[in-house]
Length: 218
Ligand code: DX5
Ligand code: ZN
Image 1 (tube, rainbow, N blue to C red):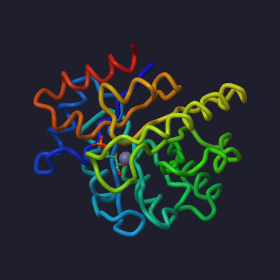
Image 2 (image 1 turned 30 degrees about the vertical axis):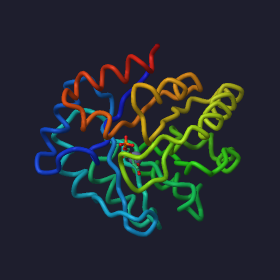
Image 3 (image 1 turned 120 degrees about the vertical axis):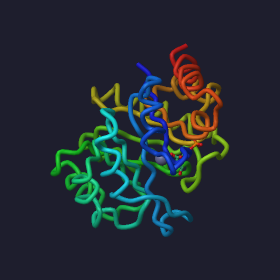
Image 4 (image 1 turned 45 degrees about the horizontal axis):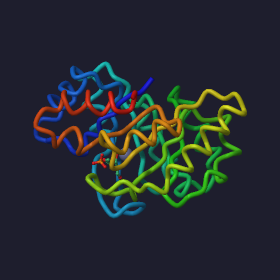
């Protein structure tokens, strides 16, 4: 089953609650929240207060993608704000196992994120501890960038590994997803797809969401 996680980074921030409700009504499965600190990535976006404000607005799980240095210092705040998933970058975690345990200790589902160039080998010893692996298919920092195709073999590699080990882990893709790029990612074994600009920049968001999901299911 294909799940779509619209990224609110591409939404209109002056009416964020309505923007979230609109995609929920259109059939989104998660709400993706991009947290950037201006250090790990060259952009600053939103923090726990946005997660807290959105929590009562939607019934959908909040998928909080931390693109920040030293995530350990902020996990408690994001957990208490109402995150359902917290994903951290392997490139930002010196003690990844500790960080993953910390996320789980708050009853939040932990996930690990790989930048486009980071090999799958970096996370093979953490797979049993995570609920989700997120592959970046753009360099993190901005919405609206071009999909990087060379990530697809990594998705297939992990998908095969998960099957071989009999693990229950979701594979999520983030960056440049639209009704074309979703196809090879779904074929490679991914199940959750973040889409920012392809949904929020569309004239008819519900229609865009449905087309992307349908393409992924084809
Ligand atoms: C990029 C973010 C993405 C971004 C996706 O750093 O992690 O979630 O919002 O936006 P699109 O779908 O426009 O590439
Ligand atoms: Zn993201």
